Amino acid sequence: MIVGLLWLLGCQLVGEVAVRLLDVPVPGPVIGLVLLWAVLTWRRTPDDAPVVRTGDALLKHLQLLFVPAGVGVIAFGSTLRDDAVPLSLALVGSWVAALAVVGWSVALLLRRARSGGEG
Image (spheres, rainbow, N blue to C red):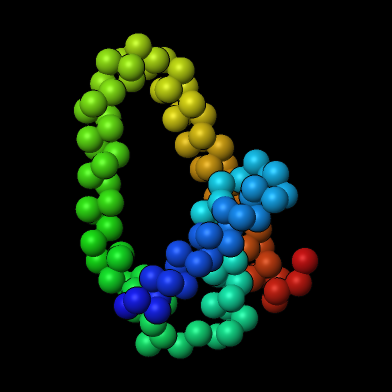
């Protein structure tokens, strides 16, 4: 478990350092996640690798990671109430954009699958 946590936190650290050095407008953990995905894909990591087992263990307790967000919503309820319209517009707008991108991606992948993987 410790080795897996070191892999996860190490990739996050590398992502944070890369963001600060390159001054890109992407969160460090996102860069770290892409790096972790690339390493796991490149190495063809087996299902019983420490990082995979650690990830599985964290996913089993994922609901606990939502507790701080819930506490924040309760603690800052008045702020959320004051900015309800812009927040609602942002949520709906991002949902529509994500739905459109997923729909487009699925249509593209289905088209490729029907044509035998070409185009």
